[in-house]
Image (cartoon, rainbow, N blue to C red; front, side, top):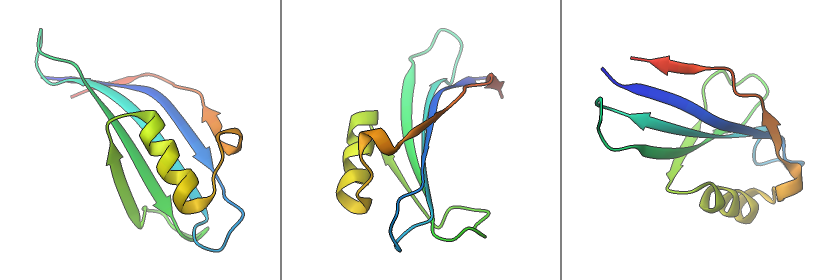
Length: 92
């Protein structure tokens, strides 16, 4: 039985026609008790306001890599991101 903790989540709504909303989440997971800790950075791309599920998703090793990708691809600057409060963790 593992554990996954949401560390941080960011949302940006770029002012361009490529995408409507971009979300970055950083999770730390421990798949086994006393096992190694892994961090996962996910980017979810929503192309329209009606999108319920992301049309694209990307995975990176670090938050810096993910934000660099978003700036290069969508013009989202560091100051454009809105942090979302972290609520709690999930237990599998």
